[in-house]
Every structure is written in structure tokens, then in C-alpha cells.
Length: 74
Image (cartoon, rainbow, N blue to C red; front, side, top):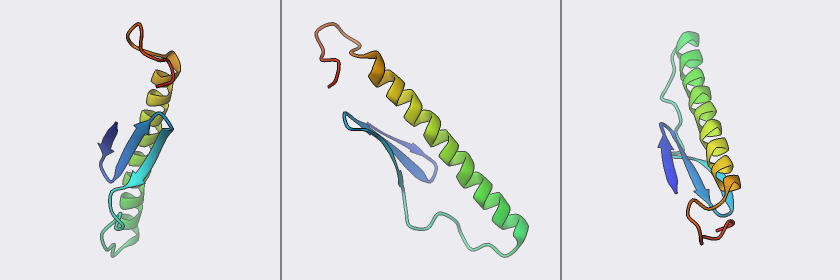
């Protein structure tokens, strides 16, 4: 299972959850301090959202199978 959170992918499988950058360029060219701060804050917000999603997926894994008969650690 994969989800897109702006500049990042949250990938989830039986092996756990991980975050991948969607591209090598995470910001455009910044020309002043305020623009730099804004771009970095946006990336931090996206990473915080990724962390929440990873924790949600991990918790879902720990709860076990959604349907009777499905393996708990699939």
C-alpha cells in the first residue's frame, strides 16, 4: 500500500512502513530568507503528516487481521 503526501510517498507492507521522496528536487530555487523558511516549513509539515500515517499503519498492523481467518502477520 502506498500513499502520497505532497512531496513524499508513505509505503506500507508486511515489512513495515517507510517514507520515500517523490523526486530529487524537494524545493524550487529560493531567493530570500522568508521563502527558504516557508519551503522548509512545508517540508516539515509533510514529514509530520508522513509520521502520522506511518504510525496509523503500524497501529493497524498491530491490531491484526480485519477478517476472521486472515493471518495476523500477513
